[in-house]
Image (cartoon, rainbow, N blue to C red; front, side, top):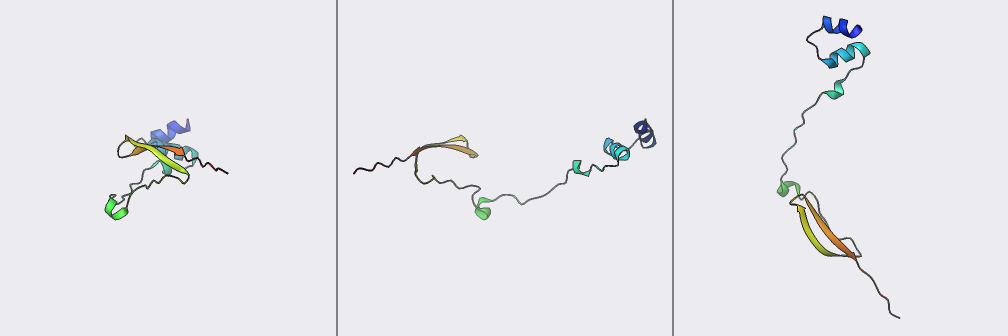
Amino acid sequence: MIAKIVQRNNPKKSKDHLYSAITGINLQFWKKTRHSFPEYDPLVHGPLIEYSVPEGYSEIERYWVNEPYSFVSILKKKMFTIFM
């Protein structure tokens, strides 16, 4: 009933204003704020990611899954054999 009264008194207000009028809670977190960032330039900003084979492993094969966004690197653990 309160919702109908508030809606009737303020027909141009959105549901966010209706909800805050009823509950007293401000829903400003639903509002989007636009941020502008400079465009990425690899020469200025450097590479996005660097990959190196972890110590103790050797790379068998590397191939792109979704070039240039993701690749698969197949690794093999190096086995050390000690002969005495």
